[in-house]
Image 1 (cartoon, one colour):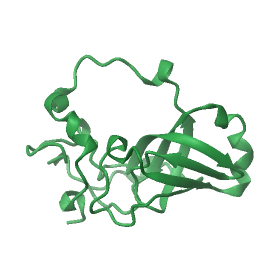
Image 2: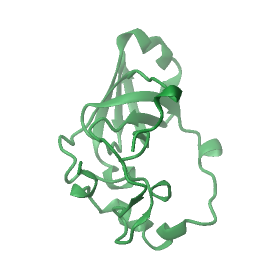
Image 3: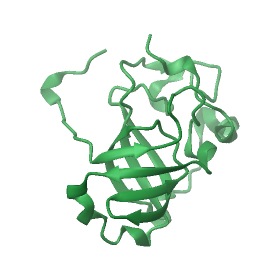
Image 4: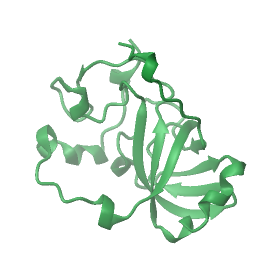
Length: 167
């Protein structure tokens, strides 16, 4: 279901995420399932100056493009359930705008290379933005978790399968 192009927003990758996951199948579905997975961010060299002061943060938020996905459905059977759910009540990767978000540990910065831990994305994923994670801002105490109330703990062990592969 294509969206109207008159409102198009164009992003360009600021770099690429490198991970041990070469195929979608068997990948962790959330950072909690990839807590020991080490990776790198290869930031475009022209943007290196923008990394100034980032080394003082233990974690960073990555915004990226699900570049291997096409199309979407407004109801999906998420990885952590067996029931069809509304797309926007899930973290399914096939979305109207293929934007993903992960919080990872920042191990070190060497020039334009960021060494990270807890990476749960496909190798070669285009990076849209990096933001520092600040628990005082980002860790909002939630009181409801919808259908995930009884399923959230599964994220540490479930792996990706074919359910969001192209039709």
